[in-house]
Structures are given as C-alpha cells and as structure tokens.
Length: 428
Ligand code: ACO
Image (cartoon, rainbow, N blue to C red; front, side, top):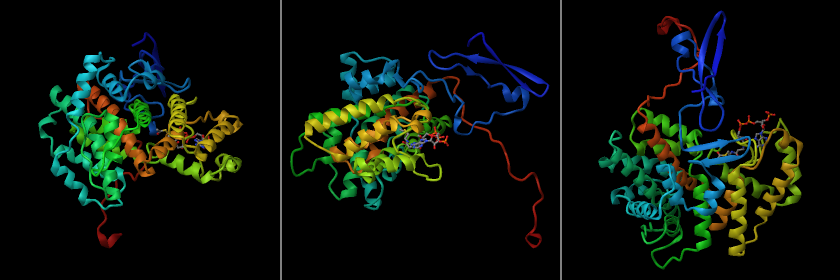
C-alpha cells in the first residue's frame, strides 16, 4: 500500500480508494470495497485496466520490452539456463543449487510415463484430430487416473500433481503427433534430458535408435524457456479462474489448453508461418504491408503486435538469434526466414507500425524454427501448451497457497430485457 489515495466521485458521492504498490510496475487502485460502498461496478471487458490477482512470478514492462521471471531477465535465462532450471525457478522462487536441480530433474523424469489405460484413449480420436483437441481431452482425463494427488488443500498433493503435469505433457503431446501420422507411440527414455526425450518420443521410431541432435535439443529447450510463463495472459487467467472454484489441477490445465488454442493467443505462430509462406518472396512484402495498413482489409501481420508489449518483445529477439544458430548448424537455408527478416525491417521503418507501436512478438520467428526441426504446424500450439504448463502450474499453486484466495466471479453490465411476465404459447 502507498500513502496515495485515489478519489472517486460519482455524482455527489465520493469515495477514497487505497492505492497499492507492487515491487515493480504501475500502482494499482484497490476497488474491492467499491460495490459495498457505492453499489457500483467497474466495466473493463478484456481486462485492459484490471489486475486480477497479486503475483510474484513474472513481471512484464510492455513499454520497455522487459520480461522477468522471479526477477531474472528472460534473455539471461534463455542464454544460461535450461527449461528444467527455469521450471524450478518459477515453481520455487529461486534458482536451484546443482543438487536441487538434479533432484528436480530426476523427479520429473520419474513421472514421464502415462497410465497404460490412458494411452488407449488416443484410439478413440479420429486420426486427423488436431493435437490440441487430443491434449484437452487427455490432460483433463488425467484427473480420472491420479486420484492420489487431487486433494488441493494438501501441499504434497499439489506438488505431486504439478510434477506429473510437467513430466507427462511431452509424452501426451508426442503421442498426439504419433497417432496423427499412424506411427507407434514411443515410450519415454529417462536417460535423456526433458527436451531430448520429447524429441525422441516425437521423431523416433521403435525400429531404430534415435540420436538427439544437441543443437536442436538446445534450441527447442530455449523455445520452451521462452514460453514458460507470461503473467496473467488469457490461458493463465483461465487456469486461475477454473482453479478458483477448487477444481483439480488436471482439469484446470485442460481449461488453459482450450484457451491457448485460439489464433489470437497460442495459435498465432501457426498463422505467422502460414502468412510468411503466403508472402513467399521479399518482393511481395510491400503488397502485404499495404494490406495490413488498410482499415478495410481484415489482414493483419501475424506475429506482430501485442496487448502488453509496445516495444520489441524480448522473446522475439532470442528467437531470431536461435533461428540463425539452428540454420547454421543444420546447414538449412530457408527463404521464409529471409522474408521474415526483411518484413520485420520494412515494418519497423514504416510510420503505421511505428505509431501504433507494433513490433514482432514471440510468434514471429518461432514457427520458422519449429518447422525446420520437423514439426508440422498443427503441433506448434501443442508445444506452446507443453512449455506453458510450467507457468500454469506455478500460477495455480501460487493462487491456491494464498490464504486470501476466493472464487473468481466477475460481474456484468446487463443490457437485456427488464423483468417481464411469462407469456403463454397462444399469446406469443
Ligand atoms: N497488423 C496490422 N495492424 C495491427 C496489428 C497487426 N498485427 N496488430 C494491431 N494492429 C492495429 C489494429 O488494427 C489497431 O489499429 P486501429 O487503432 O487503427 O484500429 C491497433 O493496431 C491496435 O490493435 P488492437 O487489436 O486494438 O490491439 P490489441 O492489444 O487488442 O491486440 C493483438 C493485440 C491481438 C496481439 C494484435 O496485435 C494482433 O492481432 N496481432 C496479430 C496476432 C498475433 O501475432 N498474436 C500473438 C500475440 S502473442 C501471444 O499470444 C503469444
């Protein structure tokens, strides 16, 4: 709390509201007593001006292009840590010692298998089912198998179910892919890293050994770090809202997956790659730039713009560098990457994009790498869900551990009919 107060005047009534101060970021006007004191609600569709919770996990300064996890800049984490280390940090507040990291990695690796009966669920889906449809179903179904960790009031249960979710997500996502291409499921190999294991389960086959390419492994691990958490975005808020009623964590994460699926959120990397392929060659860029600027054309530059970042998305910078590393190492030359680089340069020098503060976001380059690694576009959002599970689980734990936690229940501005009497059928 600061000593500042906000004064709200409605007609002749006035109300002093406390102003809260976080460790970073804008002050927050505390309106919790507003309805009780004035009988009025606030109206903020899309939560453009509303903080829905207190959180100590992730901080974003969208104007400056800053993203911190537990205080550590995303660029430093992407450069120096691993996905397991970042996961530990998000869950436990501090970077682990070597012993803590080894224990955590070991624990996660011991939860990678799925109940065998759950593997049979896959056969109930059509072969052409979208991996996200399968993920929603299978992750939700985890709650039917792991009853021994769904008492959310028990911290040990919460910890075990968190570990299970993080550990099983690669197995679930890889199996969704294998099912779609008609290949046998590949079971986890716990001697591999979290990301190496996922690559093997996705691209390996039982008929021959699979060798993990260390450059690809590192690049994908970094992509997972970049997607691990992003404060109160739509899917995380969905997980929190679902969890606020006391629903079990598996059901809550399934809700997050459903929300992430949308093209304005997790589906944007797929859309960005499709757009870059459609543009095809740099000479066609000006035509698409003009389309993006035309108010009468619904076309938008996918992978550009962000609700929070009004500066270069720090994740996009790391992503662009990673594309170069992967391409150099694999000897890949992809005209789509050249098109992306030139599109970025042209857009960043265009008054329309500068004035509206539209910069590349994390999705602009991620599809290019994922495609080079061999993932079909339908898997892109599933990979995002896999990585974001860490953030969802950490945010869910933070919420449940908060003694002041209450069920999330927004109000509304009602615009429907006022009270009227029921009309019998012959009077309608
Ligand atoms: N291309 C062209 N114009 C754009 C773009 C774009 N990508 N993004 C925003 N604008 C324009 C809008 O037309 C609008 O113009 P106006 O003021 O003249 O009407 C203005 O910029 C503000 O746009 P809003 O949609 O109001 O901004 P908002 O913050 O609500 O939207 C969003 C953010 C949804 C990400 C938007 O920038 C967009 O659609 N981008 C493309 C999709 C995308 O890349 N999404 C990924 C987000 S990152 C993630 O989820 C991981």
